[in-house]
Length: 92
Image (cartoon, rainbow, N blue to C red):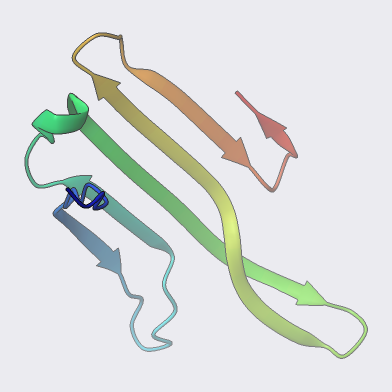
């Protein structure tokens, strides 16, 4: 009998906010499309907010992650919330 890896598909849906007329992406959100029973995963949510970061060295501005929030829940545990803020340098 061969050992083959267990493949679990996490189908996701999401939204991307696109500003007009600059086409910058200020926010991306994703969620599970349906629970993943093999992993007992009932919720998996990710939100990332982006914003302009100016680099003084070459006067370039890039849109980088500012804040991120991740929420997940398993059948055996409560919802856990993790928030990371790049603008304040804090996490919870």
